[in-house]
Image 1: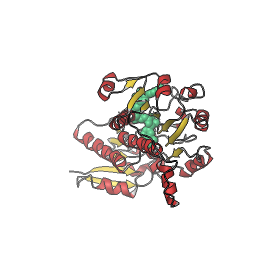
Image 2 (image 1 turned 120 degrees about the horizontal axis):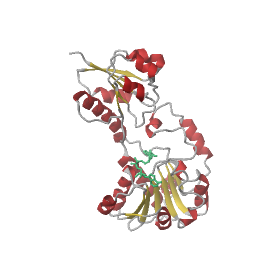
Image 3 (image 1 turned 45 degrees about the vertical axis):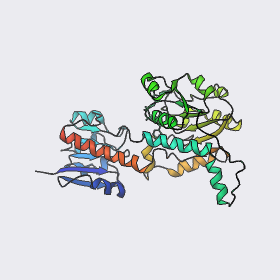
Length: 336
Ligand code: NAI
């Protein structure tokens, strides 16, 4: 029986090693570190399955060169890089990785919350200087404090579950409430204004779009209680930059933990951060310019909330599952 040929594009050595272990001798695997595009489309003329990442451009020219292609299993959530209509016309299926890191981002959210609530960042710097004094490092308990979750979707719900483990009260704002879940996990849905007024810690987990652009802004920032902590692992545009500066300057935000920051528009999806094509220098430059970088109560992390060993492996595992399920006629994450 002829082997199924799979070509993986934009792969690192680590990914190659991991993926090789997942397929047996019935498969012929090809790995290319470069993206697939019109200039190297000849590579896929006899390939059955391709697995690109986001920098490949799989347009009509590329698909015309693919004589035996049956499946495109992208290792990303988005699939803008693929001409879906053309694929459909050529009866080529497309699969993606719709989720891989809800718990991962939720855990990072708590890393930021705990760093701020227990002054870990300050303590770390002090002990490096051989200063072991406790003065100014007193933290506060999370137990019985109110966490306000804006966007109770996949990540938000994980955050709520973790918060419940700490004995926190949780309120959430979401235009599509799930009341059964609220009862099960013991949290309440409230309006945005109520959430801003009543939270000890506010954490953002909604998408960034025209409805959430500057959801927190100069009009509503004064509704927030003085000293409230603010965590953003979603997208920077959900809070108006001016309102963020104003809140930190005026101790409306007593602390802020930011994994995303102003000007980061080039990023379409998180795992882009893992490839060398991403302008890390651009992010560095943005951070250097950010006026909040030197504030004692503001912690920045370089858009790393999604990045755990397990989350990155889940991307590959889902891709492998997509391929196997496609070949055996089972359900997979089908785009078309
Ligand atoms: P999701 O789609 O499962 O949940 C989003 C929730 O936000 C939904 O329940 C939705 O109804 C709600 N929502 C929509 N509009 C809203 C509004 N105006 N106000 C309040 N809630 C609103 O998405 P998921 O997977 O939980 O991800 C959330 C966001 O986290 C992503 O859109 C992305 O921007 C960000 N993210 C950040 C990562 C990082 O590494 N920092 C990694 C992955 C995602």
